Amino acid sequence: MPATIIQPNATPFAKVAIDPVTLEVIENALRNARVEMDATLVRTAMSPGIREQGDAFPLIADHKGRMIVGQFGSFIGGFLDGYDGTLEDGDMIFLSDPYSVGGAISHSNDWLVLLPVFKGGRIIAYTAMFGHQSDIGGKVAGSMPIDAHSIFEEGVRIPPVKIWRKGEYNEDLIKLVMHQTRKPDWCAADLNALIASCRVAARRVIEICTRFGDDVYVSATEELLARNYRAMKQLIETSIGEEPVDFEDYICDDGMGFGPYKIKCTMWREDGRVILDFAGTDPQSPASINFLLNENMFKMFFGIYMIMVFDPMILFNDGFYDLIDVRIPKGSLLKPEFPAALSGRTHALGRIFDILGGLLGQRTPEFLCAAGFSSSPHLFYSGTDRAGRYFQLFQIGFGGIPGRPMGDGPDGHSLWPGFTNVPNEFLERYFPLVIERYETAVDSGGPGLHRGGNGIHMTYRFLEPGVIAIHDDRWFVKPWGVNGGDPGARARKILEKADGSQTIVANKLEELVVEAGDQLHFITWGGGGWGDPLERDATLVQEEVAQGLVSTEGARRYGVVVGDEAATAALRATMRAARPGPLPLFDRGGDIEQLRATCLAETGLPAPRQPVWAHAAMAAE
Image 1 (cartoon, helix red, strand yellow):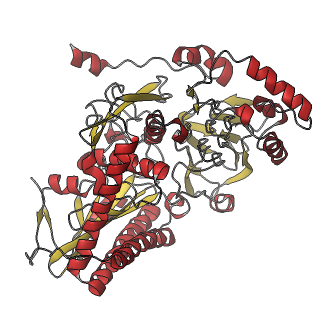
Image 2 (cartoon, helix red, strand yellow; image 1 turned 45 degrees about the horizontal axis):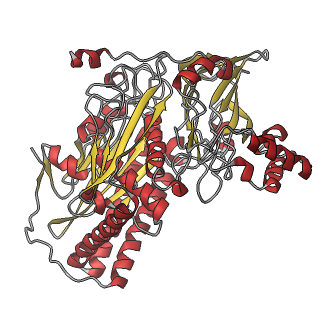
Image 3 (spheres, helix red, strand yellow; image 1 turned 180 degrees about the vertical axis):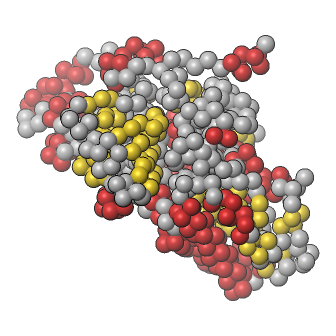
């Protein structure tokens, strides 16, 4: 049954006309409130993942729960429909169970705080913030076990509960939750930071309402939503065709030796709405790479991608949701059934953006982006130092952003634009390790008229014995190029022992023992290239050779002989003449069977085995 909202004042908000200046002021005040939420969070959190990297996401919604500013779209409508409880002034909701909110948070490491904002006896807004906790218990340090077969192995699951009830703090609840984590100091500070961020935003909303009036504020938020609807409706009519187009991409493996896992989406326009159908996506994995994709979250992903590609001046919010229909088969990799494990969902989450690029660009190749968002590389390192102190690192790495219509992809950038790297000085100060190398992975960006961004080669030297875990992808399937561009380089991980011997290790592994003096070479994938590499400015290629972004040999992939214009012209003519036909729209570097055949020789790792889905076979009988 739906939530019961206790509002002493039953007077409905009045609809009033909003002049453009007032609308602009309120819109930007809300934008600033979101920025202030982020600032409050990073200044009060303790874990590196939130404090240094910004792995947290704010939301300010209207009185009906629709996102006005934020990033992932609003889950509040679904939450209210499924929450069997009351909401009243002084309450605050705390949760971490993805299944309780339909995947609005997608694994249990994300702790979410939701604050209904009351003014004059009525809900005027909602504020919310969720952030990734570095440890929530579970079978491994970091609480993201690759080999988990159910969510029960991944740490504490918190259903929607009241952390504040009518202004009274539920201290016993917090003691219970913190008792489950290996890092209660970090988690307690991070939770307080989430709470503080929501309260800051609530104060700003109240201030706006006090200045302009409640009715003006509510009418302004409704106009912001309506404006977004009108803008997106026009974009859809001009950019999405009625003829279905489809695209598929793959998660390389599940960390258990099986893969790849296919994600497929078909898109078309019907009766003024966009249909996005994931039929054909592989069944859920028995391991933890499943992604419980919330439909509203995907609508927001789609809207953001449309807006950033076709009209970046539009402010994205929830106003356009009625224009999109998302269909995800139950029991699939993107709609796993409880209690499927979810902690490793980051790879499918990243692949969604590559799939959106492949879908939206087919009708208008001039707007097509290559692959390269792809994943969010994770490293975990934990143990006990010689002084008997426990340490635990969780760090998110960066890769190459894809080549794009407007230019090269950035080198060594985050999947999420707001993320920042953990400073090497911070790592060396607070953890027993030394960063021996932090540089671009030369030649990892796919060649093209616009080069794909290079990945990063980061080398950790461990000063204490411990165990590490790695979560990464794009080591088997390549980050594809587009419009004649070449694929980017794959991810690689190399463990170098103190005696100098080296071993290529998997890109998904748990509890690998390391000794003092061992080094890990953590090399991430590059972005795919955009356009014909032979059309790239030869002078620019030579400059990139001088900058260490491209090698002398790598320059020849662009048909460039460094320092020799005549040889460059001759090489480019030879390469053009050797082409068998028109340049491909997508270059994946081979189909799956070709990649399997060459995997060991090219990566040093055996190819993943074809998954077998027992429950899917039983369901079909």
